[in-house]
Length: 229
Length: 229
DNA sequence: TCGCCTTTAGGAACATGTTCCGAAAGTAGC
DNA sequence: GCTACTTTCGGAACATGTTCCTAAAGGCGA
Image (cartoon, rainbow over all chains, first blue to last red):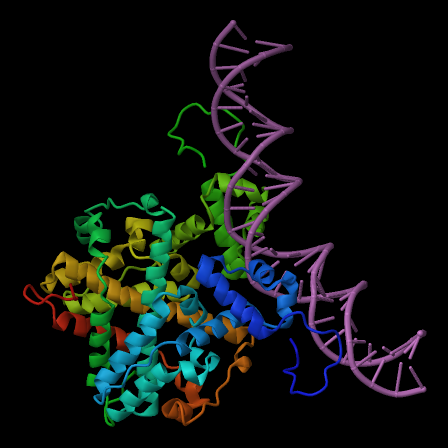
């Protein structure tokens, strides 16, 4: 990795590419072939350099993906924030969800407590909106962070599960599942049986989110701790 | 893959190993070195065969992991089910969570809508308990499945995030995060700053689960649809 | 111009899961 | 015993992300 060259004289072999150029190659590649096709070697070819050369400009693939996500979120239209704190939280969480839903690899990268430490401020207004909503409703900082994390778990889980389900379906992988269950052992599941998938197509994220936020906030406030201890 | 030999005469080259033997090698390997060390080649060595031979007994690594998970869940002590439907749901979800928490690869494998189609009945009593609780509270099948899925998203998200966070910490990867934020752009986040991790150590899963279940059920019943459409 | 130093380039190599295909090792029929 | 058939074995090979290390290419001082 280049030592974040400040300016002025340059010595040594001239770079054949740059971080910015690599990122733009990556965006081009994703736009053209989809993000599943984004491999290091392909990206190197698209950039016009050798594969290992990329590693002098990006730390690793995750670094690359985080930068791409930053760029993606920056380009999102930023909706006006509702004055009502609760609505603000729901809206911000939904925006977070939607921003990631089409970019499952982004959710994959951000599957980390404190992923906020990876992103630029320009991509963090959603997080800030949630924290601000919680604060306006009387939550302490601790409670705000707890609320955010719970919402984040739900969101990231939904995205990862749905993304993987879609991929499985695309690969025609479902037939291998078994959908006949022994009613003696699992009567309710057996009653559902192969209707499971038919029943599981609805988008329950928005409703679940609302329930979650309402519930988490119902017990909040200066006197009632949000979480356990 | 062997054609699930029914019985009787055997012809052809005699097998050097079997599915059961591979599974038990895998368990031994995991017990000894941890599941991160479970690779195909290592497993083959432990079993005493060539690497590619495994593929005549297991479909792929995911197949292997699912079988291991089945075995793991089978060995869990099955707690008595509370008569109260709501408590039953919470207990079953918690059991599901705890069963997976120490086996993050299992959550990885089960990140799929309808993962229940992968497991044996003996590993599905938790799912059935949740469906039964929902039914007892007046939910339709649709609502029960919706409730299960929402709880599942939350659960799987929590597990994946925590597992990945732990791995990151183990690799000493956190320092690369940035924890100074521009207060002008994200005031609340900036106020939290590097206290984020300090605040994020609490286990909020149980409380969040309760909130979630209560909230989802509050709007349930024969007349009030649980989800959107 | 010649050599030194700095910086970048990228081939070789490794570990991962996985597929292909020819070789190996049995039974069955003659 | 010989041939055919069937089943399993496993090395070679591929794509993936990634590290190591040597070569290349420029500026700078003599």
